[in-house]
Image 1 (spheres, rainbow, N blue to C red):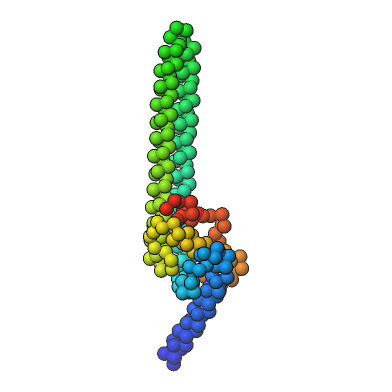
Image 2 (cartoon, rainbow, N blue to C red):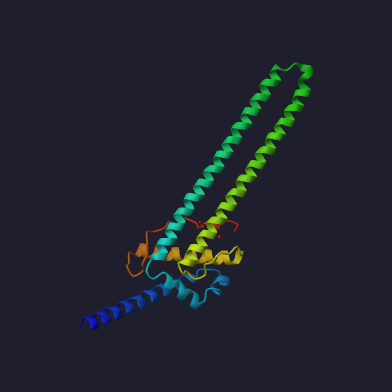
Length: 220
C-alpha cells in the first residue's frame, strides 16, 4: 500500500508541475506579445518552454532578485565614488581660483602679466589632471559593470535559464534583457495577484534595471 501511495503522490506532484509549467508558459507567451516583433521571432516556443521549466520551483526568481540587489549596491557604490571625485575636483578648482586671486592682489602691476601666464599654465595642468581622473573613473565604472554583467550571465546560465550565457554581442544582450524583463513581470504578476500558482519571490520594483541595461557590454 505504501508503494502505491508513494506512486500516487508522485503522479499528483507531476500533474501539479505540469499545470504550473503550463501556467508559466501561457503567461510568458502573453508577455512576449508586448515585445518588439524582431525579438518575438527569436523567442520560440521551445525557448519559452525551457524558460518556464527553469522557473518552476521559484529558485530563479530568488536568484534574479539577489542579482538585482547586488547590482544596485554596485551601482550605488560606483555612483558615490564618482560623486566624491567630482566633489574633490570642485574643491580643487575653488582652492586654485582663490589662490590665483590672492596672488594677483598681492602682485605688483609690472609683474601681473607674467603671473597671469604662469597661473594659466597651472590651471591648464589642473584641468588636464581632472579630465584624466574623470576618464579613468569612467573606464573603471564601465569595466566594473561589464564584469557584473558577465557574472550575472554566468550565474543564470548555471541556473539553467534559457538564453543566458556570457556574451558581449549587443543583440544577444538585448535579448537577455528582454528575457529578464519577462521574468520580472512574471514575478510582479504573482505578487500582485497573490496566487501561489506562480512560485515567485518578493515583489520587484519596475523601476529597477538590470546591470546590462545600463552597461555598454547587458545587471537595471
